[in-house]
Image (cartoon, rainbow, N blue to C red; front, side):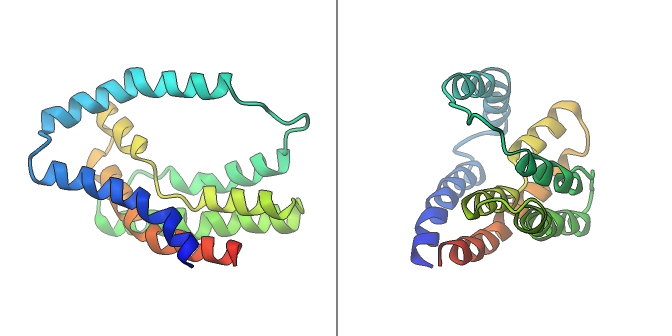
Length: 169
């Protein structure tokens, strides 16, 4: 369990610093908007390109892994407005999605344990901040998207710690 916490806590520490900076007005709303624009327009595409350019892919792609992940990922794309709806979305993202990925990778495609653990842990990650950035950018329920990001990130401290403890123990 301590290994799981040592993996999860630094990430949440960075999130807490960012949250504290925004709440204390050290970073203004305009600053956050500017940072969002920079990251969305320049930094993220460059980072993705660099990572893909340096990635060595295996000779045979694990198609069972991709099918498991994307067939279960459909629960993530509901646009919600209220905290209640964000709770439902977070439940599907943090509990149902990883459970479906685990079942498919373990029992349907019978992947190696490392692939099962990696796919399940990736599926159990909280709703990404880019869903909120995209919602803001395209004015598609930005409040609901940010509520889901915040709620699923907070709850994932528990769910990821439990899953990491289970896979590592």
